Amino acid sequence: YYHLLRCFSDADASLTGRIKKEEFDALIDVAAVAPRKFGFAPLASEQYVSVEERREARANLFKTINTEGTGEISFQEFLDWAMEHIRGKVSHGVQSWAVAKLLASPAPADERACCAGGICKWIFG
Image (cartoon, rainbow, N blue to C red; front, top):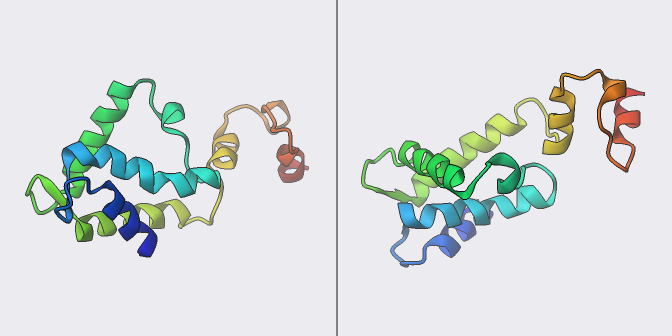
């Protein structure tokens, strides 16, 4: 809760207690720092092919989070979305994004690109 509140407050450049769509991209970036640091989320550059694609995707996300229809997101709206998003990510156990991507690869385990740490060998024997 505190982490999400801090992210929300840091992104609230207008100091209104609400996030406008112009501030939303920064909110997602600041909220994603910790998950990215520990490998639980991809970098934006790995997720989107361009800045324009990222902005469009986040504009669409903003619309879905803005359940009150005010054109601004309250902390409660953000918190509700973030908790559901996190719940969906960990519902099948916590797994780093890189490992999840590797496991979803269509290539056989022995042909998958492996990290330098040898995690493929550890996972797949």
